[in-house]
Length: 368
Image (cartoon, rainbow, N blue to C red; front, top):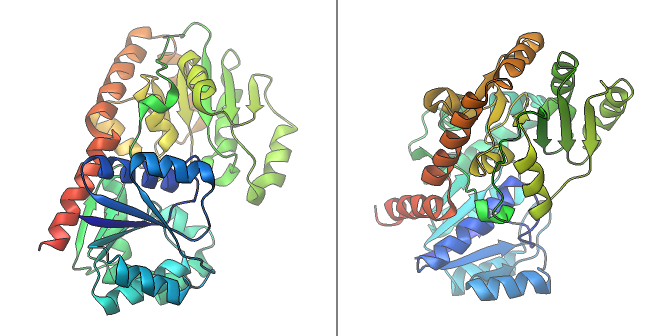
């Protein structure tokens, strides 16, 4: 099958959920014997070209503005290398909406993995997003052959976003490759009582203020946050840092073996986002056997409840702290969640499994 993915960064190591997903899925689909290309709007560097060549993945560069891909180059690609299916990733990108119109005209089917359809997320900048959704994004969604949520809860949000949609709505998780963390596994370090968070310091989205407030009720527990500032909430973050509990520590982002070691030494991975469609860092921690605690507002909380994968924290901060204090003194409970989380990732989130699920969906679309 000839597959074209749209929405990747030109570098496989660029850290964001959509980019990591695209490169991993594309690599696995090549391994499964398919002809796979990535449409890039900026030139890849030599390292990316070498990586793609080794994998057997084709990188197609078509320059783009905010509004559209360069028409003549795009026309050439769609004419000379016509894909059977185009897989778009992300939302609120005008050039993808313009591309969708071209694909409809050429009768080339496409599907969308938005990785961002959440009621709370849509409220951030709601006026601009509402206008854009009605004028641009919803028409792109309605014309798609399928729309894929990365959790069952996102699939529900998609159906609400495009009521009456006649295509396929399904749920396929983001891939998680435990090998990317250099083979590290949880060490069961519960006596030190060390909580770890990995991600952007977007105070509003990631609930950094919530995590800090919970920490105030846990004076004997260290909370370590690894990530980078978000310019939208930097002033808020600076105010929070001026009045931190002595047990809360902010660090630079970590990658690869360093990230694996930090997770392996944690007592518990914690994330208190006000909304989160998936949560790659949560899944990575689970894939290492690190027990996790997440706020009930995250989409993954539904899966945690259904499969007993970890601790789901209530939105009341003192109560959340009380539950954390309790489970940190129950090593058997943490070990149970360690094993269940690891098994769940191995059964549902591995790149080969995710790539195969998408291939089955592509075939439904192309050969319907």
